[in-house]
Image (cartoon, rainbow over the protein chains, first blue to last red):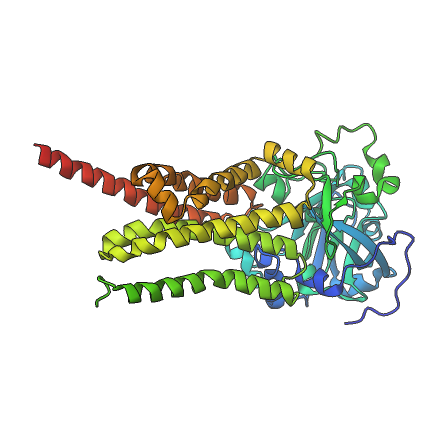
Length: 264
Length: 209
């Protein structure tokens, strides 16, 4: 399951890595159950081959990509990213993948493409958590076009140098490190480029609690808990949460002039 | 000796068995903590486990009266106080986990939590109300207060249990299955009390007529 020779990235954080065991056994992936340990226990039923991603919508070249073709489409790099969950815990994960922009430019978005919608697999036989109506399945997430094209946004195939474990969103997921973890859709089967801002699963579930942007922001609390601090998995004392999860230099320009209290 | 009329020796045995059983969740948690088997986020795990058992023991305490009425086993009442004190024991562990492990005595953060976050406000209030109930759970104080006043005070268990269930329901991100299960059990237990009271009033009324 080794992904072979990996390029180094200038976007890697210097933080100490969270042990692989914690990264793969403490997961939010409601498709396999709502507790943290259930995804690792239940994800065995997920079939990651054959697997395709349909990329469609406001594009000149809509295409269906096979997962094995995707893996070879651009050079894989290792990116050490901080991951901040909306529940106020965090990890540091060495992901493997390449920028989503590599994929998007190949389908040639039209001028109408303002947003990108990600749709995860919907198959209760493979994803037993979908038998409960916890969320409106399939899981949907989205980004603004400039966020999706940002080099930090990673189309992710692996972690710790190996193929993604199923409980971490195999075979392919998104990682947007300056946003809360739920923005990073897992087990993606469809990417749609659209003109209108898509309605995401969490916005549907709790519009007052989960906004479209979901940028990590210590000054904008979740209505039911503070976002000022976080517990880094493996550490005892909480640490201060950083604006944009510490990626201000890279992404702050995307939100210049925007009221982040309102656009939470 | 039958199950209905337990003699003193029998009662002592039952009490010892209940005491040891009630300690099991704590023992299990302590062993897991010592063996570093509480998973990636041990503090969160400890908070959840102690909170779960505090609420469970509150509800178990509230099952004693209906159970006595249904079974006719009067000695069940002799277990109620111990079970109530265990509810307080787990609630105190729950609060201590929050105070020491989760917040590490960050008083400004704690004050902000209690004032601004409804689920913490209500959970903390319930814990504060449980304190006088635990302090008055011994024979000497019951005698000094008198049965009537003691019973009036300990009726605060009902709002505590309701507050506990609301606290749980308010904090989960999405999956309300477990809080709803607690709420259903509590509704049944409180509903039975209302039914007993209505039935009691009717009998009293008939007698008066």
